[in-house]
Amino acid sequence: MTAPTKAPANPYLVLLAAIILPGTGHVLNRQPYRGLIFLFFMLLLGGFTLKTAAPDVSVVGKFAGGLFVYALSILDAYKTARVRAEVWRHRQGQAQA
Image 1: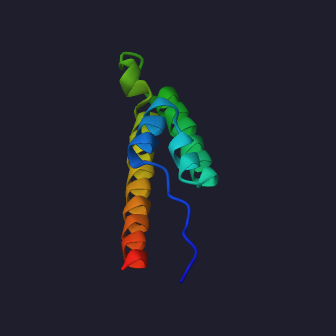
Image 2: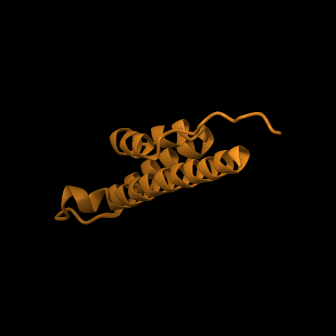
Image 3: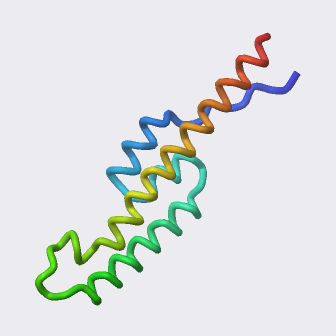
């Protein structure tokens, strides 16, 4: 028998944290470096599109690169949390059988 493992974070909590503050979803998933990398690229691409966008572009257009990476980081954090939760739940069911 293997020792019971600690339950992963709730995927909905990870989703909420990732929406509110970029990178915190990955921290809850115990992937802080991945969260920092996403945050770095958000700032990098947000700054790049800010500098290269035409003057008449909206604020969303000026930060489009950063917003795109932000959306990807939310999806990545939630997907990772969801997969970890399901794998953990499946393993717990096998341990009881």
